[in-house]
Image (tube, rainbow, N blue to C red; front, top):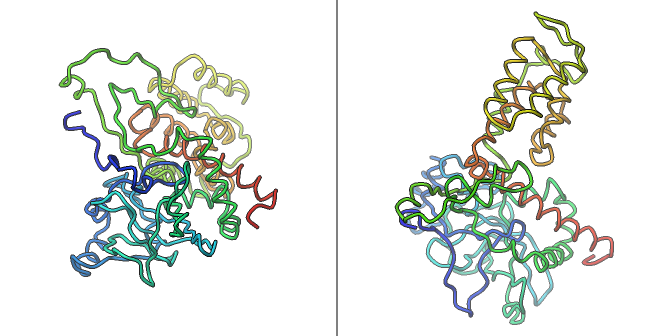
Length: 394
């Protein structure tokens, strides 16, 4: 693969090692840590790490790390983990703070015991009163570490943990950690093909298997046949998905389309005013629908709709545009609706369609990974609620 060789992939383990460190919600490997990429994002973190010195760890509040958007290196969100820790000798479970994978060795580093602390630079090498050692849980075979009475960990990306709060609720999970872990184990035993994936991936000639999911499928084209290595590298791109929690392109688009309350057209059905004609609402909607139905998803279709709206001064109901958005995947839009936020919905909807013309953006933004993660999370939630109903882990 030449210059596009896979980086930070945890491979080549002996059979005696612990399982590969993976998030038990999205199933993705925790990549080897790149401190420089994290410090590039925030100058205050760089100063903190420098002040602490080369041989000392650097710690920030967990909430600060969770709020940080990684724009320079979008995939840096995936370096970090919390863990649900279990002591087999006492059967006690608790949620840890945040740490990261090792930058040198393919095994777990000690993790903060305090859930409100986060390492941005973890040089701890052994357990102490602040940090807990653990071994990655074996979800598919007999766990030799559990059998030996060693602490077991179920790692979770901090952003996946926040998605859990949104769709399940920390207030339900935290007092029922045993049932939740049972749900996780049962789910992954039935969905092993989704386990231990590497989020970063190659895209050949505009085709990417991660880009053809059920949400906004990319147009299928035949894969380019039989190319020399040099030719293949020219049409190969390296996708590095951003966080599934916050899609920065969508956040910017929302900000660009916010309206003042004075300019807010509201949620009601407004009369459509036109300098050329005064069409009934249903006829104007039919015309816009016709453009959608007769043209594929392309820039020309988006431009035609924008031109229609501008030329005839049409203001279709907000509900029309909201119905054209995938609010289950783009839950930010659902938040706007529930909050009654004043938004130019036509501009927002068409802007989203424009972003989705770029298949590379769909992967790199984190949106495709969000769709995948929410699908997995839904299965775990179903298992969890079933176990609670049965009284397991209570």
